[in-house]
Length: 182
Image 1 (cartoon, rainbow, N blue to C red):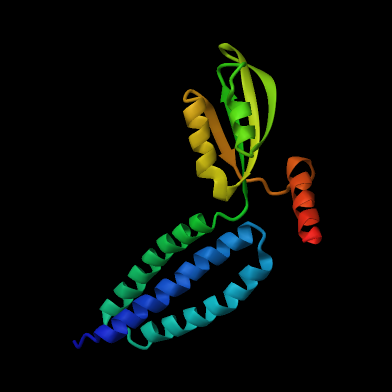
Image 2 (spheres, one colour):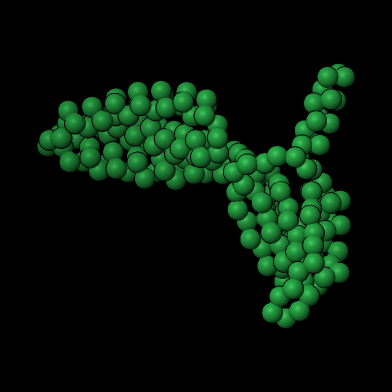
């Protein structure tokens, strides 16, 4: 059995590119970037057909299939890393603090985060609950601020599907007004 290293590399690269693009496209769809996702799907399916035809035309060599599968696995991982770096969309963080007089809301506001706070009551008494909406690109910095100021905080994060009004709407309107003046 002859092993064509060039063909193996090509099969790996094609499937790697296809799956990386597939993963990013899927995440774009989930985050509501429909037009980008549609454009990516055109490129994605072209790469897919090319890669699949290379493997199907060379099934006599099982190494081709193994390399195709390796490209798939690496592509999924790299696609997730790319999406994580792009950090598209927003995250909603709920923080429950054991100290109702915590300085964390002020710290977060000083760092540009919009914070809604309200009193809460838990098993062990009064608590302070915070809700923070932040761009995903600022998520790690936000977690760092929370951990530094309130290491005992209970933190839950989730992705909002719809945002309207409030802190974000005002910020966007101000930014657009500044752009019009320039």
